[in-house]
Length: 200
View 1 (tube, rainbow, N blue to C red):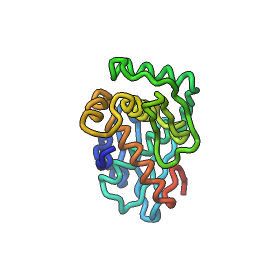
View 2 (view 1 turned 90 degrees about the vertical axis):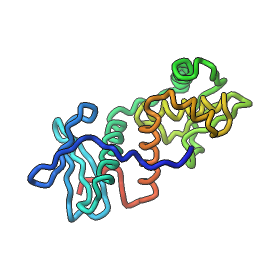
View 3 (view 1 turned 135 degrees about the horizontal axis):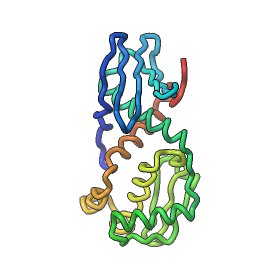
View 4 (view 1 turned 45 degrees about the horizontal axis):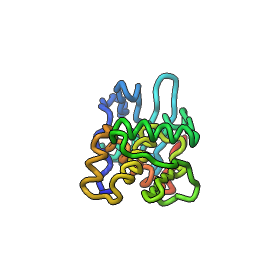
């Protein structure tokens, strides 16, 4: 996958007199961002009635805030909707994604979850027609799982990561958002002092 920065565009915000950013966007619901000088390293989020509170260090830039708000909102949504697809459902989903985005040309012989892939999200063996998804994806937003599954399906048609491969993925409208989400996960895992959810 070519390197690219996290999506810097976040939900629209307005700053209240108290110094709190309030996000008003249909796709996110009502989100209030609270900056704290006491908060040095942690980012956290929680639901409070009909809104989501995201707590960040006061020193964060506007771009960092936008990235973390998006990551935390997606993470909360995933935790609240932990539908884990069984392997039969994964195969059905793969067939649907192939039909919708690859004209049905990618036809895997097997699609399954595995627990021995901690360094990558998915893998494909074109000669065997097998696709394996890391169990770490379970509980992530559906569009992220779909992106990884579609990525591996595309490898059944194009083994490498050249231009022809990326052209196949251009058909999926949430490619950039899914990649941004996964890059956010990787960045957070490299910073053990940034737990996903913590209330100070």
